Length: 246
Image (cartoon, rainbow, N blue to C red; front, side, top):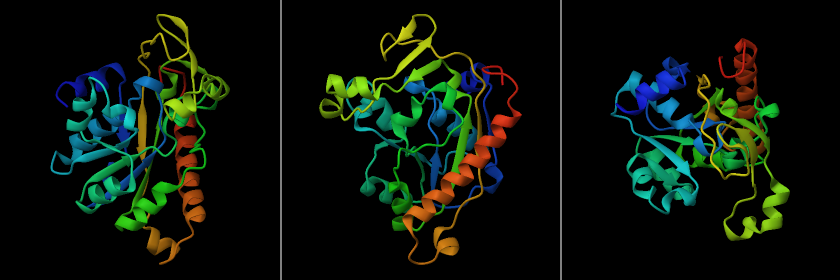
């Protein structure tokens, strides 16, 4: 964090709002995901969270298996990234940890820039069951600015299917973007993220049982969470004056 904080606060001028309402104990932070290969959601959230609460409550991030392969695997493991499955989520939440999940995953992180202010989880609702099983609240959280780090043109779902990536790597997208310094990119070459201002809004926690009963309808809870997030994101978008600048 001593290395990340100056970078996040300086390069991305990050803000995390609403932490004063964050619940005690285990909590499932449900967030949109922005910034493609260089998504800054976790560094931005962690900078704000640890700055306010200190390091007694660890942050865990449910992540795609691909992060735990290659040279970076040890780094991600040591910094709280855990493979995204119900067993890991349940253990981390029951231990009192703060678990961050991006239900939309890479589908969300590579959404077209023209749709950057739309909450879209691609129909994924497993996060609701994870919160119910562990008996913890959901904390809806939204970020704006990350999808301006370059211009995302298309997720490239058709291209990914044509290349067989969906079967070989569980990858359903082959994103196409335009950025600096290489211009047009289909994942490679890797363009550098622009110094876009990133703001995250932490919303009021949702106690699922208190609000939806002992046997909640998963679809109903998911729809409510997404509606809360969309309203918060719309508010951030209305406040934003210029792309990148903020």
